[in-house]
Each structure stands twice: as C-alpha cells, then as structure tokens.
Length: 141
Image (cartoon, rainbow, N blue to C red; front, side, top):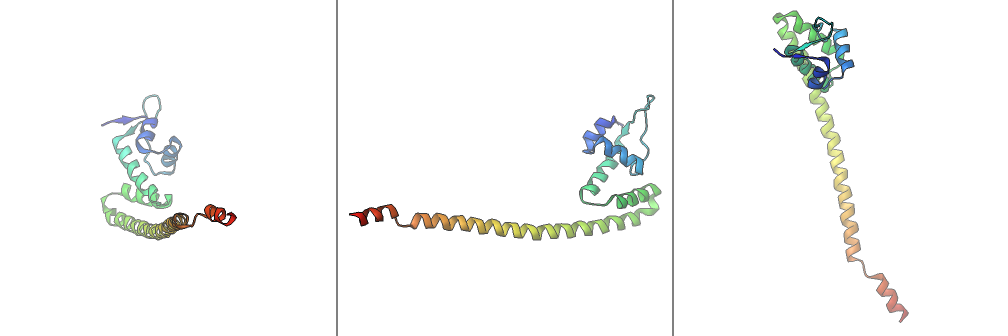
C-alpha cells in the first residue's frame, strides 16, 4: 500500500491542501493517519475515496449531500440501498443539467450558423458588386 504526503495527495486528486484539510475537518474524510512527526499520510484508500469525492463535487453535488453519502458509506453494507438512492437522485440532477446545457448549446450553435451565414452573404455581396470605381471613371469620360 502506498503512502502519500499531503502535497502528493493534492497532486493525485486535484484538490488543494486547504480543501483536503477542510474535507477532513468536516468529516468527508476519516481522520488521516499521521506519521511519528505528526504529519498527515494519505493511503491508497484515501486517494480512492478522494477520487469519488472529486467526481461527486465535479458533477455539482452539494457538500451536504456528499456528507450524507460519506456517512452512509461509513455506516456499513446495510446502507447500500440508501447509497444507491443518493446516487440515483444525483444522477437525475446531472441529467437535468446536461439537458439544460444541450439546450443552451443549441442556441449557441444556431448563433454560430447565423454569423457564418452573415459572413458568407457579405463575401457574396463583395464578390458580386459592380466595380464602382470603374463606373465613376466612365461617368467622368
């Protein structure tokens, strides 16, 4: 089993040192083991759990829900159905966010097409326009 310093744990998980300390303080992490000098040492299990927290946080799960999930995990296997319910609820929230983003993306893509059409029409107008300088020259003659 590997052991990680706080800096290594931060690098592995993408969390800042402050976030790691905060997560430990509020109970998202179990108390992190310390070496003889009192320095925190993270295990592979800690890194794995932080990966799950990164996933939940990255998909917008509120910290209160993450705490609820963490307590269920620590309570033991008899909470598996409750954990599934928490994750299914979050999955529905993520699906709704994705649908909303797709809708907004469609509007952005529509605007892109619109502006490309504007550019194409401008190019067409420039290409098909009479040479006005030559017309003026003919009028002067």
